[in-house]
Structure formats: structure tokens, C-alpha cells
Length: 203
Image 1 (cartoon, rainbow, N blue to C red):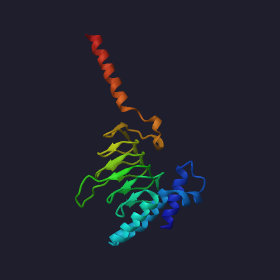
Image 2: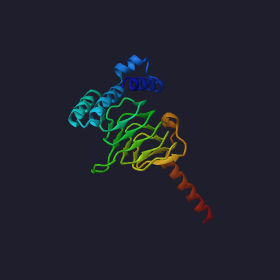
Image 3: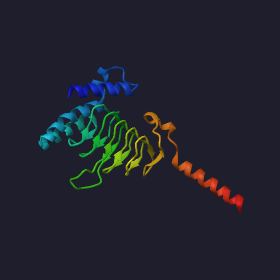
Image 4: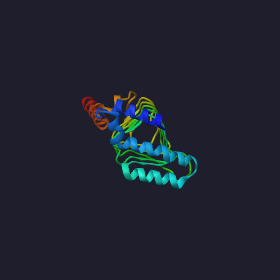
């Protein structure tokens, strides 16, 4: 657990320019607190002490505003930035070096006892208030734009935006620089305008 805490501290320090010291992160960062509590609740969950696991996760939600089901599998080096309103479901899986911003939901789309929540692969970034729903895979180093609703698999090294989310390119944007994400709707409108002008010219 302590090695995991140290790895998370180092990862947060490397990815948050607002962090001035590891002590500040340790004391003041709710994302780190939520994941630390989750490590404990997940241990009880694996031991099938479900009620105690849920009590710990509920206490963590009260303290941090971040809800992580005890059954979720979260690797080391995961950074939940700001974090308020984040919900991570029971069968969600999050690999290393993932960054998740506030308001994100890793939600389920089934009431059956099965894998019903997303898998977030290494190096992915999930933008603020994105909703990632169902048993889908978000590929390595992919980027989910803020406010997107993702209901299908996302290939590795791909940026997706919109409702429902669509790929903007086969290249991921470094750490989700939102000003660099193309406007898909504007692109489609310009394409239609161009085709309309071509039709007018030919008529």
C-alpha cells in the first residue's frame, strides 16, 4: 500500500503544475485520499467482507466527494484531479498512468452480475464531466474530451469528443490540450458548405 501511495504521489507531482510539494499533495488532494481509501475497501471486498468495504467507500465519498465502488480495480499511478463528482463503478478497471478529471462517470449499462463498466488502459486521459458507459475499452494513451459521452470502444492513441463521442484523429493530444481538439460539428458544416458550393457551381 505504501509503495502504491509513493507511486501516486510521484505521478501527481509530475502531472500537476499546481502541486508545490509531495506533502501538499498528501494532505490536500482528495483524489489521492479517495484512492488510498479505495485500496483498503478493495482489500475487504476481495475478502468478501462487503458491508465493511462499502462503509469505508461511503466514508471516503463523504470526505472527498469521489465515489469509488470497492470492487473497482485501480492500478498505481492514477491521478483523479480535483475529483468532485467522480463516480467509478464496481467492475471498472483503470490501468497505470491514467488521469481523470472532475465529474467523470465510469458507469454501467447492465443490471446483470457481469463486467458492465469500462476498462481504461494505460496513459489515457478522461476530461471533465465525460461519461464513459458500459463494458467498453478506452485504449492506451487515448484522450476523452470534456463533456463527451463514450459508449463504444476507443482505439489506442485516439482523441474522441462529442455526444456520442467520435474520433477526431488517430493521434492523441498531449495531456488533453482542449484548445487543440478539433470542432467536429464545425468540420461537418464546412464540408457541407463546400459540397453545396460545388453543386451550385456545376448547376
